[in-house]
Image (cartoon, rainbow, N blue to C red; front, side, top):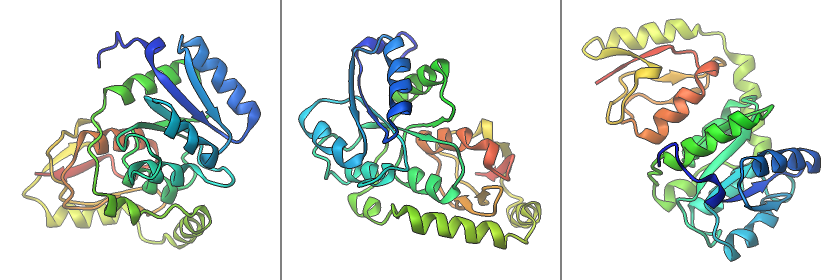
Length: 237
């Protein structure tokens, strides 16, 4: 979809349990001339809105009671939300937990909106998300995604405290095994390339595994997360 995307034609669902943040984001969205805006205070309250209304894009927070943002996305991707499985999804985040980010990537989200949110940032992310092709996995794959925030936060904390191996050494070791590939910076990745080494977060968690064939959706998420990745380049075929 070109930059001439008519934002006022979009139907947006905003989900956040913080009434103040929801009010601020509502004002930003309204100032973008988006006229059809639905709101919910958590994932559970968002479900009937998705069922009973045509929505083009979901903008959701993660930490919410009753049903968190990851579980809401999982319900959409598995077809349990009674709306289009390929609904565009933007996640509001501060990049604080890499395990949560990993679950979002596995659920094929269409963008990360970093706090604090600005009008320009909101407009850019909405336009990019609407342009992006959402290549869905099988329902079975989405059912495997961990959406329990307590366990995800615990795993993230344990990994952060146990990172003693140099990320640069891992990168060097992987590279030495795959000298037949070419070294490409993360910003120059292209759809169809196959990774010959892993991409890591700075805390040691794995973002993408070697052998993965890159899609537009995955490349866009890697680029968005560059500030929290250990790799600056990667070997590919």
